[in-house]
Image 1 (cartoon, one colour):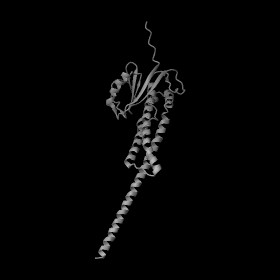
Image 2 (image 1 turned 120 degrees about the horizontal axis):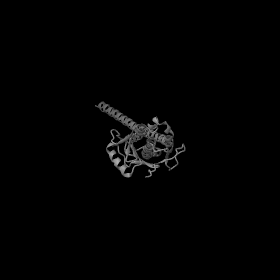
Image 3 (image 1 turned 45 degrees about the vertical axis):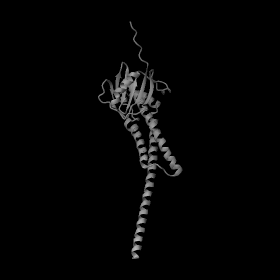
Amino acid sequence: MTTPAPPIQQVTAHALQLGDRINTAGFEGQVLSNTPLALRIGPSGIAVVFRYGVVVFIALTTDEEQEFLERLKARTFGTITPREEEWAKIEVARESEEPIPVGGPILVKELSLERLLVVSDALAKSVVLGRAEREVTNVFDVVEPFARELATSGKTSKNRNELLKLIGEALLVQHRVSGRVAVGEKPDVLWDRPDLERLYARLEDEYELTEREETLNRKVTVIAETATTLADIVDTKRSVRLEIIVIVLIAVEVVVAFYDIFVRGHH
C-alpha cells in the first residue's frame, strides 16, 4: 500500500509587473477565476493576471513562468524594462491575527484559491506601488535642481514645455495608482468571502499599501504644485518680456512720428 504524498505546506509567490495593461479577454486554459483572471498551470501552480499589467505566479517553476510570460507578450501593452518584481513565501499554518513577521512567510489556514487570490492582490498592488515610487523619485530628482536654481538665483533657466512635461509625468503616476489600480479598494473575492477580511488587513499592513499610496499622492501633489509654480514664473517672465517689447515698439513709433512731424515742419 503506497503512502499518500503529504500536502504542500509552503509555496512561493512571484509578482511581476510586465507593463501598463494586460488584455485578459478570451484567455485559453483552465480558468479558476475571472476577476481577477486566475488559471491553473501544471499540477498545482496558479497564475493570477491583473488587467493593470501584473501577473502573480504561485508554485510555478522557472520554466513554467517563462512559458506563461511568452503567452502574455502579445497581450501586454506599455511594456516596462526592467520589470518590477516581488517574492513571498506562503505557508500553511494556524492563521492568527498577529502581524506577518518581518521577512517571514505569509501564514494561511489552507492554500485555497480564495486565500491565494487575496495574497496575489496585495502582492500585485505592492509591485505597482514600487514602480510608482521609483518613478516619483526620478521626477523629484529632476524637479529639485529647478527649485534650487530658483532659490539661489531667483529665476529658472528651464522652459515651459519641460515643466509641463514634469506635471504630466506626475499626473500619469497618480492616475496609474489611484485610477487604474485602485490600491485603496479591497479585492473582489472579499465580497463572497468576508471571513478573509482579516487576512487582507494583515497583508495590507505588512506591505503598507495605504501608507505608501498616501505618501505617493502627497509627493505627486508637491511635484505638480512645484512645476506649476515654476511654469507660472516662466509665464510671468514671458509676459514681462512681451510688455517691454510692446513699450519699446510704442516708443519707437512715437519717436518716428515726432521725427516725421519735425521734418515736415522744416519743409
